[in-house]
Length: 337
Image (cartoon, rainbow, N blue to C red; front, side, top):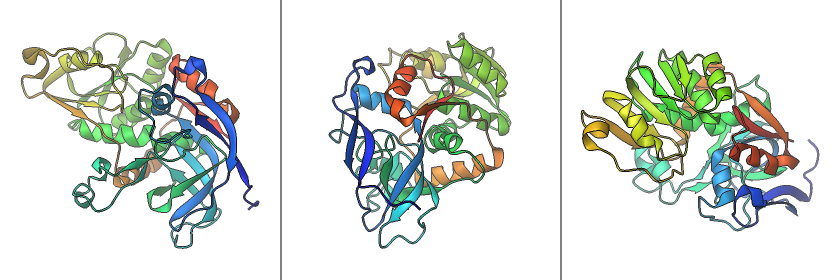
């Protein structure tokens, strides 16, 4: 292993603002030593998530001044804290959105750590992976499936995990009809997972490129209008509250809509009889547990879903976010070092 450099190159959110106004800056800062239970990772790839865009633009209020975004990190262990036992220097490791929980509250004690009031998040509360090096808590790091390129693995760590949790929250019955609204990074992985489980998947997206990709990946239909038949479940990935009544109206009796985003624009008024009556359910998706992450990565290792990647050198992270904001990313953008 090469020696750890004294300084790290990293992107920081200088002042949250529309991405067109260049809120990110590329800076140099001292490389931090790992704490007792931490790993210092040399970043090899980092996925670009819509949450990173929300943080850069201020849709999510900043929690750490000049924070480095990025929470789909594939890295190589460069140094370990003195009490770390599960990882060694040179190991290939993943870091995801959930960075820390208290471990003591009633949510942590009942396997609902995603709801921990003291939870902290990579790229929001602590520096993330838009950098050469990043510190992660070893207890929240993941061992990664072997045999995949780093840039294909990185999106699994949020797009994949959150899509997995959204699919679980949607209560899709075996062989059921699933609607997917929006077809970006998370959706294109979740669709493959649902198809592999025997679902009939219908995708609603305005992008012709995304429609073509959805059909290539096994969707039964893909278009900009309502699905061709009533749905047993739906997942809303697009951060558009206006689609909530649209998705609810497409549900069959007893159907569930899971809203997968961390940020959503305002939801219009709902009509009880049309949108909610007959046991229809709306659920949000709040982060994930480590068990979600382990379960999804194990399933992904078996299924080997196609990951449609657009690669960017890490020096072009601002360009990747601008392309994401403008709808120019099909699949998922990934920064590579």
